Length: 313
Image 1 (tube, one colour):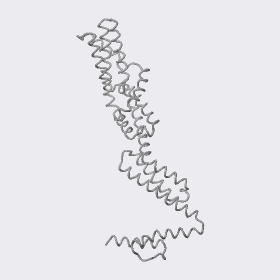
Image 2 (cartoon, rainbow, N blue to C red):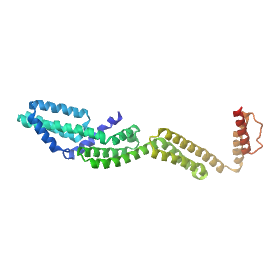
Image 3 (cartoon, helix red, strand yellow):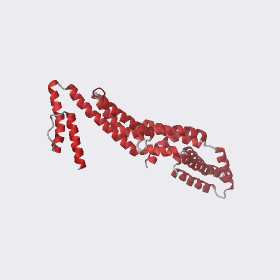
Image 4 (spheres, one colour):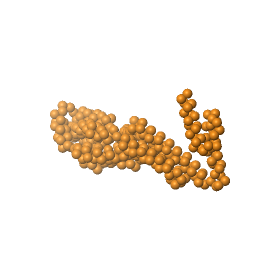
């Protein structure tokens, strides 16, 4: 649904392009076919105008304002010309020819739409992905640039300049990929980056350099994964969790390191006793002998062995 919700803004830009563009591709052939069919058509000028009106409505319902805007605009002008000629009392022949030009132009526009749906399918599909992840909200300027390039591709298709379309589409797809990567990275990793900035403000790189670097490395791994496969949702989710936890760990170590570094001599014992109490809570839960006379490292080893033994019972 969002794909078509975005069409109205594109249509406005397409109309601007159409206003200064030349007639559509193969216009001389369209005009010749219209003159021939009008000459052999066994119907009145009024009837041909009715057919042109129906064809114009079909073109609008087929969203030619997006897929072939110059065809639609030209056909509308040709129909208006035929109607004015008919009202002015011009002979049926010229009126029918003008109305038939509108019909043939719209038919050419419908053919152009089908060609666009086929040739520009990679771009249109990628555009739908970008809209689905709200790239237009997160990176509006970049997305607007992509939209302008898409308009230019459609304009080239209306001129039947296929070689240029092929070249330009490849360049556009590369830009779309980068915007997709930027969007996914922003959604998944911006909270991690903001968190790291807060740790940086606490002096994390200086007081906890190992934990800080570990968090940076895990973040870079997540970024590399997104850059390579931005649609690998499961793998990206795992990488995001890893980066989040590494960052949280870096903050824990930074806070503790700052507390130790800033402690006065009389506060050092209080910090050590607090760490000892953390281990002693495990001892109480295990109903273990009081071994606080041992080093914290030895206490941790004994408690780990006791837990392992319980898990095997």
